[in-house]
Amino acid sequence: MTRRSCAIYATGIVCAHLLIVGIALVVAQVFQTMIHSRLKKELTLTEKSQVFESWKNPPPPVYMEYYFFNVTNPEVFLKGGKAAVQQIGPYTYREYRPRENVTFLENGTKLYALNPKTFVFVPEKSAGDPEVDLIRTVNIPFVAVMNEMNSYSFFVRTFVSMYMNSLGIEMFMTRTVHEVLWGFKDPLLSKIHSMKPDVDEYFGLMWKKNGTHEGEFVFHTGEQNYLDYGKIDTWNGLREMSWWSSNQSNMINGTDGAVFHPLISRNELLYIFAADLCRSIHLAYVEDVDVKGIQAFRFAPPRDVLMSPKDNPNNEGFCVPAGDCLGTGVLKVSVCREGAPIVVSFPHFYQADRKYIEAVDGLNPNKEEHETYLDLQPTTGVPIRACKRAQLNIIMKRVQGFPKTKYINETIFPIMFVNETATIDDDSASQMRTLLLIVTLVSNFPLLIVGLGIILLLVLVVLFCRNRQKKNEVKRIDFTEAFHSFTTAKDDTAYTQVSDKPDVESSETPATQPMRNGSYIAMSPVEAQKC
View 1 (cartoon, rainbow, N blue to C red):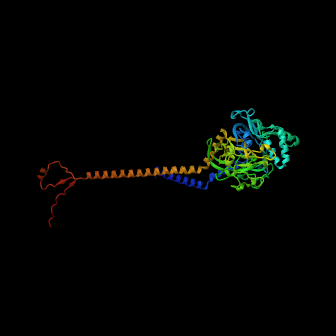
View 2 (cartoon, one colour; view 1 turned 180 degrees about the horizontal axis):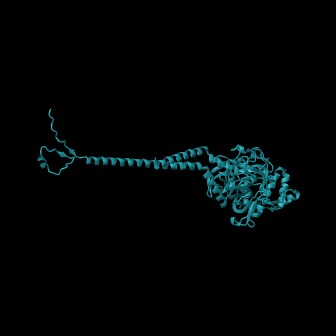
View 3 (cartoon, rainbow, N blue to C red; view 1 turned 60 degrees about the horizontal axis):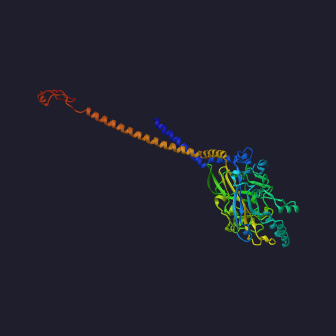
């Protein structure tokens, strides 16, 4: 057997083994299962986990942008006309949110933690100075007190109204952005505080929220089941709330939005408990996106999250009292806001009924600026980019006994909205790309084996064809040589004259002389024997 034949046989054997082994590994998904098992083990909230430190101290910077709706025609609104607002902002603050008092519970399967948030103003990302810029907005303490008076008699309401008029308190107020946001001493609340000390005399949309937390959380570490990774077990000691009118609405589902389980599917719904919304919401897959070279799935709240119970009966439990429901796109949260007629929505009433948008001039909802979404890396479940957007509104309506409300039309009045954003930093993105490359290579290793087998198969075909071509050339050469040898032999055995003498001389040869021609030698005549 020649070297060429040995090479062909060896290539064929190796090729066959590679293809068989590679296809078997692809079908059995051995390497994919192995890497998935590794991810499920590593992505847990345990001290040895790779993600534990980043969970305790998130590296990506988080920014909170505040936008306010400045009322330009309060007199028109009080006379029964349509209010007009002008958006101002953003006023941007860097948000620091380290986990504190982290304690493991129940043999490390659960985790207790607080999440205080601290805000630092960032002037270069802001539209102005919050301590100088003035805004005119709804006097929320006035409206809250007026709403509280609904349960009292007409005489009491009239007396309170006259008292507030004597203090010079109006339905709209002009304050600096800093005061509206972080608090000021309100004259009406100060009077109430003197009679009821438990009522705070200061008011601000973010009053007492700088440096404080949203409650005590206990999380699942995900060590027992990777699908429970980061899920909330209890909030302030509760497994469910009591504000809403159905058990389903009171459920505390999902995570706090900081982490999600690995191996996320496009078909699943992701749940987040939002303490500021007093409820859990779900997110659905929207599209694939790319963030700093990292492929991610974008999830966003679908329209049915804040849909009217008429269109989505599952939302009936968010009507408090039962049957007192608003339309699509808004959620009344008075039950967890000390009775104030507060309503939450997406900015500019995005995804809400047109009647809320058209009730106030100056609103222009659009997806790019007002959608809430979360971009998740599906293999690890790590949030790559997030935009949490929510709007704070207040219900303005007529209240008997308060003459200032006599002509106003009931309106869900926009106050301000927030845009909480975070994007993975460059160092973390680089580490993520490296990790995903390793995961991809390990998961697709059987495909590499199959690919190498296919390459060797092509090499085998080439070698086989060249070997066959070589044999054909050898056969043609042998046939040519054989034909040449045959021709030469025929020429060598041809009959030729030995003598150079002319034929005339041959006639003169004696009759007794034998003839010689070529290599033939005549026999000498023998005399006949006599009997």
